[in-house]
Amino acid sequence: MKNERMNAKDLMTVGLFTAIIFILSMAAGMLGFIPILIPFLTVIVPLLCGIPFMLFLTKTKKFGMITIMGTLCGFLLGIMGMGVYWVTATGIIAGFCADLIFRSGNYASAKKGVLSHAVFSQWAFGSMIPIVVTRDAYFAKLINGGYGEEYANALMRYVPDWSLIPILVAGFIAGIVGALIGKAVLKKHFVRAGIA
View: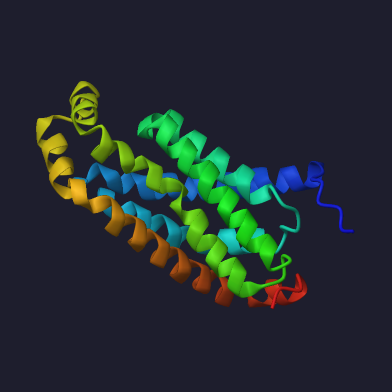
């Protein structure tokens, strides 16, 4: 039976790729200073992170590695003011589900890897939830945080109450596209890792 217990090298791999994905996510997040781009972040981030995530999968052969990455990404984004409870929860759920999907292909299925990234990409979706679910409190938080009433009103317009499902679906599709790009770019790495 294959040993799925993580070792120090696995944890270092998780740490390295978490840092890469989080930095890319934060770079994309800078676009959030333009309110109309906020709902598109759940599309931009999966497109940017497809290559590093797919490279991470070539080094992932143990259950829990993707879950840890999702948890860390969610928590880090949360403590930066994006709704720590919501985004940490979506990070854990998305990471765990992506882990299950990739393991179901015995860590050797490129198709499961693509699907894994599409699901994993939903970790950032938690940052959208408080805008809708706690709208009044979020609006006040923006004003108190110095964003100004014009920015706050614009954001509320661009993320209406009905927008969460379309944002979730768009992020999932972007996750598939980002993973396919990553798979194409990293074809040699996939062959070496025995992922077909």
